[in-house]
Length: 187
Ligand SMILES: Cc1cn([C@H]2C[C@H](O)[C@@H](COP(=O)(O)OP(=O)(O)O[C@H]3O[C@H](C)C(=O)[C@H](O)[C@H]3O)O2)c(=O)[nH]c1=O
Image (tube, rainbow, N blue to C red; front, side, top):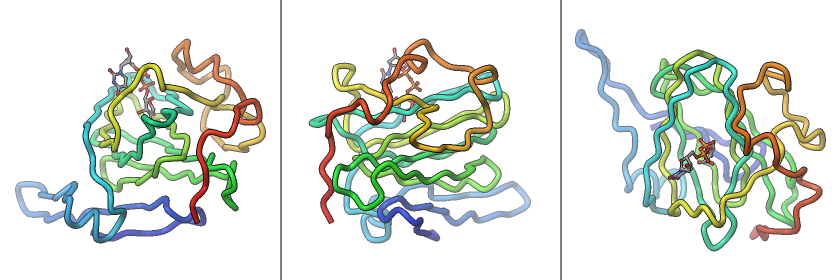
């Protein structure tokens, strides 16, 4: 697999190899050994799968508070998304800065988002299916978020307030500046 860095150290684009033939393709989408050697020395405990029926569905910006913090390895198996990770580790040189990337089923690229980051995506096609592995179990009590349209984050979403398809929960998150320090940065 090919692994690429971003301006925010730790976030990585992971592109598994695809073996194509007349039938289609085969790809190892995750290997514990390869992930630990090439991306991050961390294990996964839960797989998630979401379907977003409408183009313009925006889920985010989410995180789980410690001790339920999650790293996420995300990918698209149908359709396409504009995916975003925001560094919220206090003391980080890139605090409040984000990485954005288009992930689609055609390429099969994955994004590794370490614990300490917000995550969200906006679908670019109808019927987009999003799969991801997480390093910590779901905890409703620790589930939290930041406003997707927080002006301090400067995220150039492909939708606006009028066109985004949002859950009620995602309409009510606070701005990042209104959150107390939650994640500490470890250089
Ligand atoms: C995340 C999660 C949710 N749920 C239940 C809780 C709700 O009854 C229902 C929908 O949950 P929610 O509206 O939080 O789903 P999303 O808006 O897709 O949230 C996810 O979207 C963004 C992009 C993320 O990165 C997170 O993984 C996650 O927050 O599934 C579970 O039972 N287990 C889980 O791990």
